[in-house]
Image (tube, rainbow, N blue to C red; front, side, top):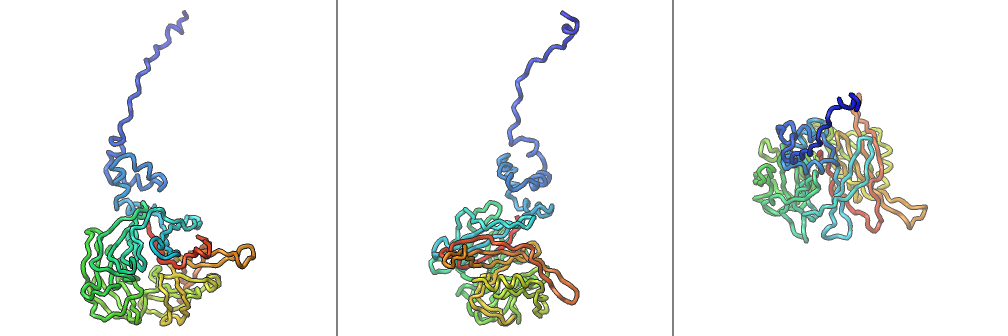
Length: 399
């Protein structure tokens, strides 16, 4: 035997591999919550489901209120747009919620219906977004007002019950100020005409009486400078100031507007977009949107805030079933409208498409505001017989 062979080091006996420590005792879970949270917020939404099975502590971080706040702080939050459609035939199940994601390259996916069942099927509900969820408040069930409140968790797309209001309401005004939901009107009880909901305590408290005889609130819920505005059926305009705890009558109708970077934006049923300062209310037209006007003027219905009414006191426009629908999205406007499209030149063969456009606004010298269509495309198509007759709500949520 050669010396080289004799000098070959002995081989180590193969030892049995030690099992990995259980997930619950992994080094990751031993990190302080603040450090662990800063790690999990960077995980993509598609991978969170797998991460949630690591341990109970990781799963609790993913569903904690601090999760989305930290994502926003790090610039990782995702903006989502939810649209509620009323589709025939009427009855239970007719209000349906869809999600529309806006990608970074301005690619807009088609509206996709949320698979989870709704816990509130009422019509004439009021809707607000707060943190990571959408609250659906009151409405009419089988022709009767409801006090039910439901919350759509936009992180999981699951519905959950929330503490009911003190009284039943339908077509009530609802708005969010400083993390609380203010609701008033839509009921017959004068002593509980308005109330406020605190999500932290899950309790409702009565608001002071408005001291004004109202005639069936038909629109409202817009919050301008931390005041909730409303208009009743006789065009009485007033607002509630939570900081002052009192009601005031006002001369201007903010309820058909969308607030973008401190400007109030209005749109009429012809697709004309107007803007004004909150304390001025001198309406001026947004320039550069002639293409939008051409598209919307030929629409069957143009949606904004879900109410059939004209802007006669503001823009002297028509009201021929003209409904406009806009919502704010990352400092821009999202506009929804519908178009009847003839297929292959056959007038008897057509589909109805719901279109969406994102519009950015730019202030220019001379006190002018110009608009630019960042993108515009169809997000849904349907047979006319199944045509979604009404866009009830459109809400943007940061998750």
